[in-house]
Amino acid sequence: MIEIGSLSDIPRQGARIVKTAQGDIAVFRTLDDSVFAIEDRCPHKGGPLSQGIVHGHGVACPLHNWVIDLTSGEALAPDHGCVKRFAVELRGDRVWLALPAARQAA
Image 1: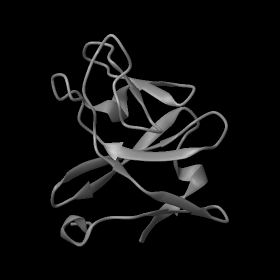
Image 2 (image 1 turned 90 degrees about the horizontal axis):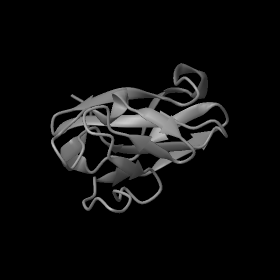
Image 3 (image 1 turned 180 degrees about the vertical axis):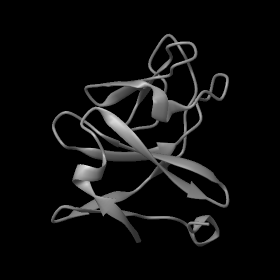
Image 4 (image 1 turned 90 degrees about the vertical axis):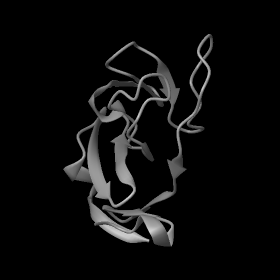
C-alpha cells in the first residue's frame, strides 16, 4: 500500500486523482467520510469519473450521467458495465491505496 495523503486533502463529495503508469485512479470521499478508489474512466464513453457528482456512495459520470456504485464499481441499472476498484484504508487521518505491483505510482 502507498500513502496518498490525508482525508482532508479530498473534499467531501469530491475526488482526487492518483496518477499511475497504468492510468489514473480516482479516490473519492463521501459525505459520511467513506473513501473509495476506482479507475477514473467511465465504462460507457471513458468520461472522467473524478469530475462527476458524488451522491451517497455513487458518482454520476459528467458526460452522460451514468451512475457508478463506488462500493462495487458497477454501473446502476438500466446501464451496464463496471470499473476496476482499488482497496483503500484509513489509518488515522491518512489515506492508503493498494496498487498491484505493475500499477505503482509513476
